[in-house]
Length: 176
Image (cartoon, rainbow, N blue to C red; front, side):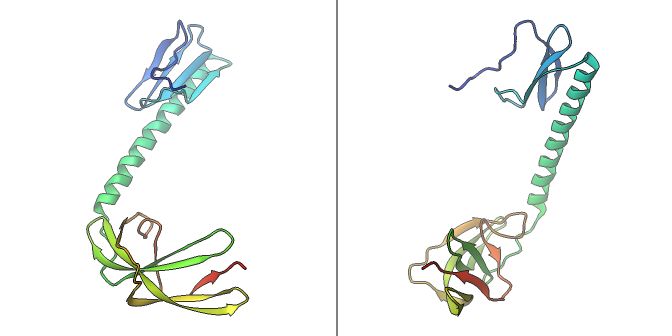
């Protein structure tokens, strides 16, 4: 069952409120319940040994949410400043699988400030061992069934689930 309002025990008073969090406490000063943002489920609901211990927890909690908000703003600003490092013709790849490791290579066909459009390219795969081998991308050799995929450039040097390919062979495995 979803609740659309916060649970605030009868008799509790507002002890702390800012743009990031709110904390309500009991009249005896030993219990408190805390919420962040617009959350309807509490982050904590504690009983303390003293009002001073409660106040220390509230100060720490509020400071943590203030730091979290500042870091979020900083990350957003860094994303706006960061230029798209990819250019048309760059090769990206991803590895995936459960009982085996599959490899797909993609070539960048279009870029914008925040995204890349890629299409899957063929690969030169060689078996180097039992059910395993290495693969290299063949630039410009788009697969016949390739569809254009738009990926958002991320702060980790990749685009979506794709990573830049350094030109070295990538390991793949198969399952019998």
